[in-house]
Length: 61
Image (cartoon, rainbow, N blue to C red; front, side, top):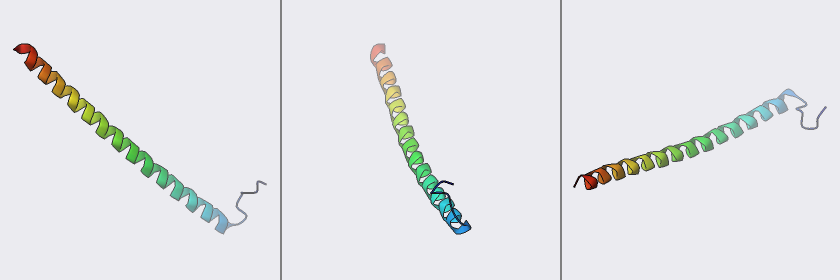
């Protein structure tokens, strides 16, 4: 039997709780990164659209 295997129900409960907390923290970090990526993508898309509009207006002159 591995050393880190829970020996009783209390240790198993504690292990499960620690795992749950670690997973929640990981989910928060991933959500934060995804949010930053979405904001950056939106900013780049907006900048691209502005450049296209300005370029077309400049070319129409």
